[in-house]
Image (cartoon, rainbow, N blue to C red):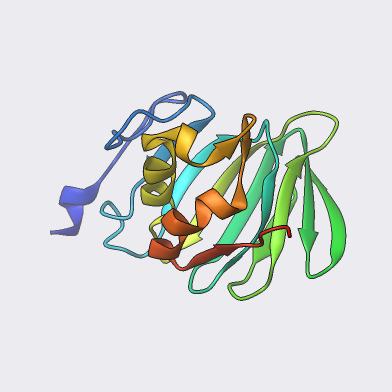
Length: 153
């Protein structure tokens, strides 16, 4: 019954995750909560996300505060508080913090984004080089979620 899926969270509260994720990621609605339709996270973006493509999921971002730099289809845009960004599947994009790290709501449809985050943080050392996300190391995990990170030669 749909009423069994009702969730009410306090401001800083998140849904439980399979593995601990950094406090910068708060899962508000899991893929299971929404019967696969979407996942919703509150994120504080302190580090850039390398250029990548979601092959099946659309990504939506609503900036709560701070400044988000979005590289989309070879153009750069700045999103500040109150701005919304739709990143349709199939188009390469990258995200990075601006002068003030942004806090944002991130929706992935269909869901699955929180599962990728869990897999990524299960052993962060497997996906980073010198403390930064490494596309070549991310791709084996990302492939499971139909995401491809652009690798530098």
